[in-house]
Image 1: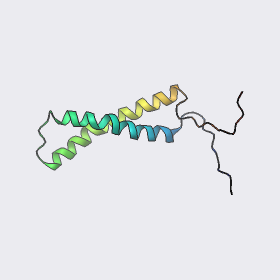
Image 2: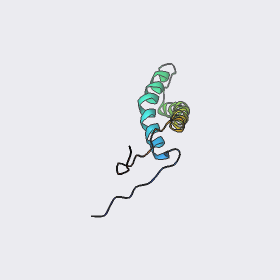
Image 3: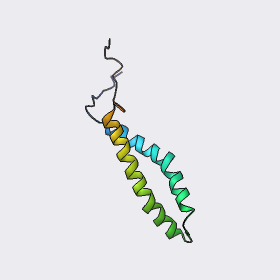
Image 4: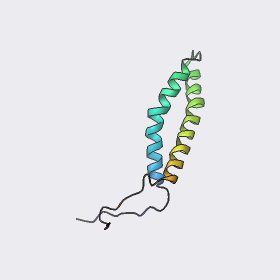
Length: 87
């Protein structure tokens, strides 16, 4: 059996940031877009799609920035090597 390779992440773990952004955008962003859509008349599918893109893109971007800043200020998403000796 071959050993699993490990990586040492220095700084921000961008994989963690991307995964967390994806989940947070779905959990927080989708309800925001749905609530905002109740205030606008969206009669055709084209209008609905354009609304979702116009509102969803900034929500995704802001979520990504918040998650990145959080990861930068804390050790969130840092890979911990279970084989390392810590005292």
